[in-house]
Length: 170
Image 1 (cartoon, rainbow, N blue to C red):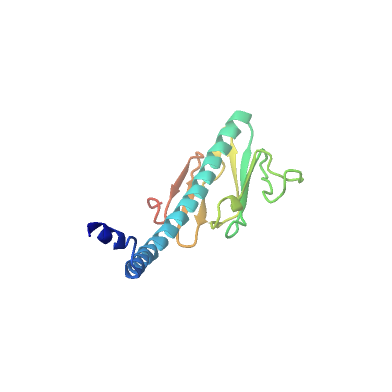
Image 2: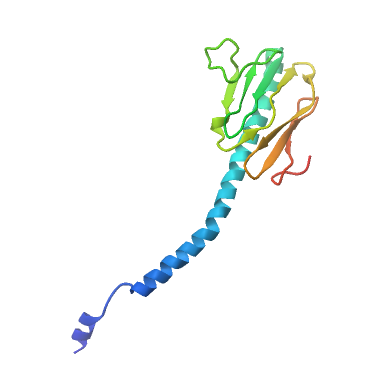
């Protein structure tokens, strides 16, 4: 008799258990997805800021190494249509030019499409002299859909990321 009971026993999930499980997964996903999207957005903004800050430091060190003026040229734009580049020239370069163009950025060129969903708020040239560092103090703003921050460059050529809800106030 015990053998027949084991044979009739059902294994697996009932339909009600499956519906409850799927409902719980749906509720958890609806809570987690917005938080995940915000985290991804913050990380993309941070990556763009750190890339720009690193290249400002590169421009400063290249000007000392080459004993000449090195300029970081930016071109503003939204959602990846911006760019910046480094050149050994006091007049700057056109970062939208390919490497074969007449006014291309021969040291380095970075396209905003490398940093998806971010925008650069201003177009400018920041020149670094091997003796005086940055020729002028300035700031560059980088934004995403819900967050923003800026990079301040002082007259000594040192850069600092600040502002917004990701960094300390400027």
